[in-house]
Image (tube, rainbow, N blue to C red; front, side):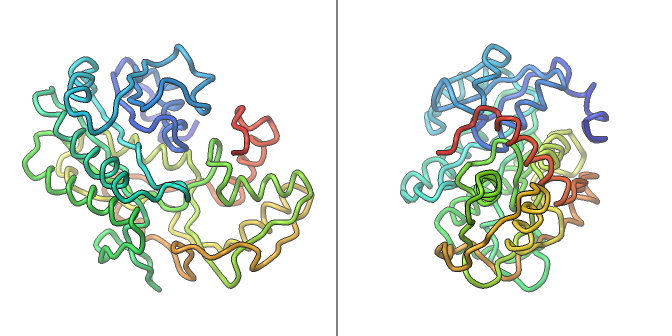
Length: 326
């Protein structure tokens, strides 16, 4: 357990919390941590079961609802009376999720519905999930004050939701904070993403196809990200309306990361450059300035890429939590 977790162990015991997107990558890790800390976890979900939370059946309460159903969401909020709401549900995180209307409905309207459903509740904190996709590329570390110029519809929808949260915080009695995670990796990641794909290539002795040229990422281990969510949900004077980058503050090329993974696996890894088409979010320079999170939240990523990949590799070798490749 990390130092941040030890400091939070008494804070969350017996505390009711609501998590949207608990079936997702970060959400599943957050739900597990909250349960470990003794929180009373409620998950708001579009379906009643999901592979990432299947092993936790009976340990948390599940509420089925569409995020844009204001009456249903408000009723759940009144029933749960959460002390903290962690909003991680999103549409557009997978390559096949491209419907513009659904992007607006889930990412913008859904966020608005949740924030409005806080009205009339006792004091609660609300942690919104933004995205590094809200930013344009920059040769310098990206600060929270950097101009928002998203290059994708997903990024545009997340930027709209983040701006709504900042505006709502000016009049809301509740603490509303947005976190912008960068390239998160670790247990329960989408099997189609880079690190899980590279792990399978290592373990199965298969070549890995990468984009041509140099593409860099600011990799951050998921348990460090969970620490940031817990910190952001703690009531603090003057925090409402703020946005924080959640990243390591260091960038590595994709080739560096997969070569390191190959060495850690002991199997090696053959890389085929140009065997994968470039994506809009592939950048030559992509690193966050994390000073604000360190100063205001007292948070920083403590897991090195070496250690995070080693932990991820061990998790996959142990059976990947039953999460099968999609």
